[in-house]
Length: 128
Image 1: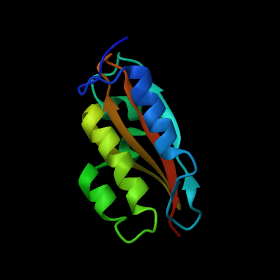
Image 2: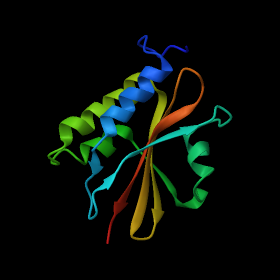
Image 3: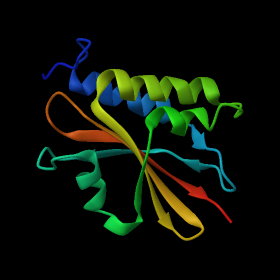
């Protein structure tokens, strides 16, 4: 198996991400769940991976720290910080993106695994 930066296997990292988002929701008007994502290694960047499923002109990069800092008052902040740490400590080039679709905004948190794949999570924010 391919090893992560801290010695975890790729399967271990994916399982830790699955566990971290199980039952976790993104706080917005609809409190949407997180789902796992995996893109192949053919993408040059996380933005390119997101661009494969979203219009390029709607993609806005958000600093990963700011994304989570904006959630500091949420009761789930401990679990959200765990998710942040899993992504930033186990995945290279971790980035957060917002994809504006009107009142719905898709949110992608992705990084490159040691195997070269882009992995992470997606959720949605309802903002009316």
